[in-house]
Image (cartoon, rainbow, N blue to C red; front, top):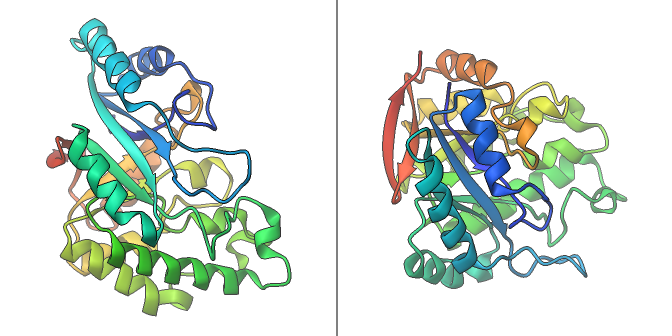
Length: 267
């Protein structure tokens, strides 16, 4: 089974999962590797929500779990960083100060608003918000690109009023291609995130056309994540993810250990 490198626990504001429960479920599923990538989204714009956690406590708990379960599964330390252009220096310092194995860079905002909330789309066409989202992502990667994998690249489509009806890679190819070229230039992996399948979007994030285009542009680094916020969603639709990756021309996926890619051949 493919390693799950995008998983949340109670260290994330939007999850109540106990890390030990996550690890035990991963072992039961036969996952070879698990990485808890809890949220740090500094300057998150919704009042009353703070996406941050005590990294020292997180490291102690992960080390304890590794001591208990490390003979049955590889447990990695990770973080999901919510990208904004003004946060680059702070994130760079965080990654220097703490010995994470793996970091995800994720675009959660469009023009300072999270598309998770319907008001982000008020008075606008879905396609207008989607384009702004990709343009913001391009700006953010130019400002900060020291993360390991680009998370759920077309996350915004999950929450559009009409979801995928007004969306295709071709309609936004000019800006998406620039994003992908930056990922290749900076050796940043592209994540296949199966939450889109779970949310009945019809495809993972990003769309397979984007994964294929990343491969055409020379990208070889792909990671896989369920984006699970509850243990029972671990490894969701990973069999389908594997088939999609192979159909897009990939022969391997990768894990990251101390920010170095470790390639694993797809079946």
